[in-house]
Structures are given as C-alpha cells and as structure tokens.
Image 1 (tube, helix red, strand yellow):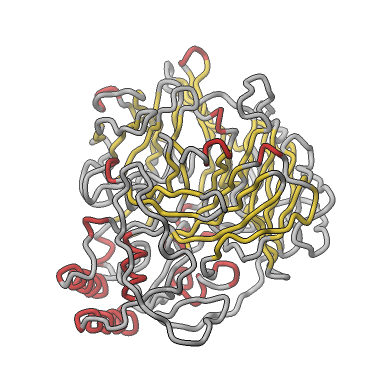
Image 2 (spheres, one colour):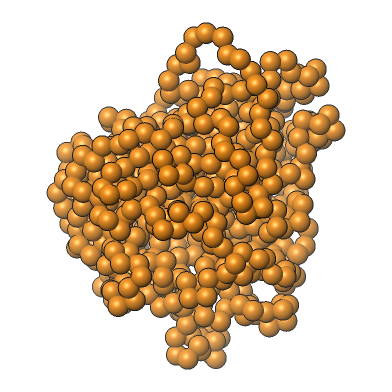
Length: 603
C-alpha cells in the first residue's frame, strides 16, 4: 500500500470563488493546496467582539441563577437582548488569584506550542463570535424543502474570553448555531450554552476554570495551576460540584428533550423557541451523581427509543462505565467496566442489535508525563488498541470480551451492525494515522475510513480502508443506527479540522474498486463542518435509505461570509438544492443535529 497523506483528492478543478459552487463537481478529487498562513491575534484575557460596543453607561443587574433542569421550562431567558453583565466590583480574592493566574501564564506556563497558543488557535474562522439574536436570513439559491421545517443546530467551541495562557481548540465554551426553517423561510441564531462555567465567568468577567486540554504542562506549572484552582474553590469563586464542562461538542434529542453535550460534564437541556431563539434550561443532574459525566455521543435506538451511553475516567478506575437511559428519559444502573486496565480517551462507541462496542485507543491521560515536563494528554505508543464488546442489557461486565486491534485508533465510530445471524459484527470507523499528532498537529493526521469485520465464532478480524481520501465526521441516516446500512456521508479533510467538501460512501461496493459514489467540494477558500442527513419522508419506512438531503454550514474565507447549504443526497454530484446566506459568521466546529418541527413543538 502506498504511504497515506492528508492532502488527497485527485484531479479536480475548483469552481470560482463564491460561497458555494453553483454547478456539480465530479467525485474524483484532487490535491488541495496547503491552507494559507493566517495572522496572529493579540490579546490577553479580553473578550472577542465582532461588533463594537455601543457607547454609554451600562446598568448592571444581578444574573439569574443557573437552574437545575427538572424536565420543565421554569423561566424565560432573562438575558436575550441584554448587554453582558459583569460584577462592577470584584472581590479582592478574585483580583489576587487572577493576577497569580496571569503570572503563571507569562512565566511558568506560556503557550509555547502553536496548538495551544490562542493567538494561533483562535485565528481566522476559528476566532469566536458574539451571540446573535434570531435574525431573518435570505435564501439566495434554490429553495428549502418542506422536510427541513424545524431547526438545524450545530455545536462548537467559542471561548467567552481570550485565555491568558495556553488554549486548545477543544477548550472553548459551547455555542449553538441554529437555523430555524418554516415554510421555506429561515431564521438564524447563535447562543452560548449557559453552562455553570459560562455563567460564573460571565459574572466575574474573566476566565476562572482551568483549560483541561492545555493548562497542565510540566510539574511546576501544573502544581501552580492546581494551587490557583484550589484557591478559586476555597474562596467561593466556583464550586466544582456544579460541573466544570463546556457542552461544546454535540447535540442529542431523546426522552422528549434536546441536549447540548460535552463529555467533561452532564448534558445541558436546551430549547429552540418559536421565533428561533435558543434557551438553556439547565444541567440534567438526574443522569449522574456530582462529579460524574456523560459521553457526547450517546446512541439512540430508533425502534425502542432507548439511549445507550457511557462515561470514562482519566484518573481512577473504573476507567469506563456503561449505562442506558429508558425511552422516557430515566437513567438505568451503571455497569462499571474494570477490564479496561488503563485510562483511554474513549470519545465515541457503537451499538448493534445485541451489543455495545467500545474502542480502546492509544490516546489518554498519563499523569507521569507531567513530571517529565510534558502535557498529561498524549499517546501511549506501547499500548495495543482493542475493541470491547458487551451485551446491550448486561447487568455487569462478566460477558464482556475484548479483541486486539493493532493500529486502530478510532476516535469516532460511525455505525455498526450484525450479520450472519449475529455471528459477524461490522464496524465503520475512521482511523487516525498517525495518532501521535491528535492534539498538537491535527492537520498532519490522515483519517482512513475503514470497514472492520469481526467474526465472533472464529475470533478473526478483517479490515478494509474504503477510500484514499481523509474522511472524518461521518454520519448515516439516523434510522439506521445499529442496523445494516449502505451509505455514509463524511467530510473531506482540508486538512482537518477544516472540511473542503463532503463525500457519499457506498459500503455495498468493493473497497478495492472504491466506495465513494458522490462528492462535492465547496470551492476555493470555502470550508465546511460535519454534514448531516435529513430524510425526505422520515415516517415512511418504505423510502430508500438515501432519499433525503445533506445539510451543513460553509464558510467562505475570502468574503468572510457563512452559508447554510442543502444538497440532494441521491444526486451523483450532491447537487445544491438550496442555500441561505447567514447574517453572522459561523466558526468551524464539531457536531450538529436536525430537529423536526413536530419535535421542537414538544420541547
């Protein structure tokens, strides 16, 4: 096999520099030019703003308390159109600890690597934006099909303040970018998920919580940051029992509720109002005890309505805990998994009719690295990756079994299903190559989309890459989660974490001859986010799997404009059906979800 590289895409002529191409493109793709260099940003512990503040005096008012979500909307959003509220007089303890934090950032733990330097990480379209209230948006091409009546919402990191020290892309506060569609008209809105962290820092007016992916680099700096964090807790600046998460990764709809998710905390319930605004209802504490968390990638069985989920620990066993949530939103008992002997960064998993499948990767936290002067987040090259299989309704881990998967580091799992009367399990997942660059040089990683077949009887495995392109953030028709499906829609690395376009992969074809059956590049200077499939007739079981639309946000770095794109999923060139010019910029982010109008009305 020839060496793999992140710059794929063979023989393709880019269209003209417009927000999105108006003509179809062939699915044979060509090498992308390296991304242009971007200028550095300057700033320290200050707030990003895209629009200048209005002059004049601001009257400061107390913030409403962060609510604990009980399943009912208890209050209207009190700050929808109010200016940002900051305490007029900070307590001396806050000022002292803030000063110590700045000294640590300047002398003990400066952002020495570009991957954790906010001046680089928050450049270009990775720079955060301010909130945008519901704003009517113009359909500038085609039309919006009636099956899109509802809301497409995408989550992603958007730091409230520029950190004074190291900052990683994964460390930003969660912001939801929603486009609500009704009868062919669109309304766009961007709102922060009002997590406990967000509200505390909003009140104080500066960063308070440590950045988990970037703040601990070396023993001296880590001890100093731990001391600062302890001082903040002891002086009452925040209480970790209320959660430290960002809710910046994904969204999920289950149990009659819409949740914003981040794996460092429990889910936050949110609501999209009739006028297109986004309200945070509160933290769903019934899903776990204090200090516990939940994955950002729960799996929903469309037949039963059940939700399967997990949490992982980076410090103490059990390093993995499996659980499920009933169709009406009631969490069931935990199943601790002690057969995972070392902490692993288990970001995603899969379900089939009978199993839950967990990828144990080489990525994880190793606290001993701090003593060596390095970040604890890294890769263990001596560890052999594995796949773990546990029955979906297991009472304990006694029936769990593992199989070694050398070289497989699947951070996302797109889907899995059973064949041959349950004797064979098929898994679809992108493999990060080489995984050593996952935190510091993501643009150097090639994501090889693989079809992995496990024969349970013979305990044998076969693995087949299905494309030479770097494909990640893949999705399927949600009705096929845990079931055999044919099509996957994935973004093309430009390189990652930006997407140059989207492809449609047909897994019924031979991997040797190629499985990419349709594609679309966004054009020169245009990059997108994770695609999402919306079925044309979601309640009709007779329709074909790919009968629907692929939607996503696209940003034009030349014109600095963002758009919402609707593509025909059955078209061999993913033809553009409709496009909406957005009134605000949408930074590159993570995962999204479409919520039909009927479900929005039930929230």
